[in-house]
Image (cartoon, rainbow, N blue to C red; front, side, top):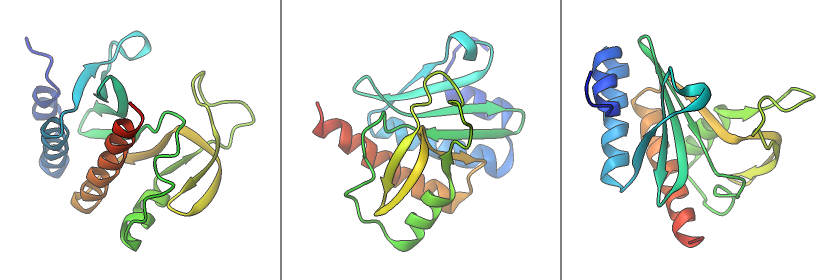
Length: 158
């Protein structure tokens, strides 16, 4: 494969709803001015991308054999404190929180701490606040709103 566009890998590796949902999210992110940077270092041999807006990370995407994962990134700020979402969005977000139960950090940049997510306090939340595995169409819609919140947070802090 000559071009390293994430859409090429989505089409090549994923099938069915996973492919459809991943392509939809990638199109949404591009339409909202976000860029995809292929991972290096540890991630170099994997199908891994950092999604950025104005050179700030928004989320991370990993594509594996017929599977994909997305981690949100709030880079230590409380992007999700002041926004009041509908009940369904809150429940989806809370269900996908990355709570680090380890006594040591789960990775060097973990940065776990207490965070308020949509009005509820959580302890030991990873810097990659939420993780979505093979999200369905309803979860994709929630994720779009979460990415929009992060984008607006970046704009406010420029």
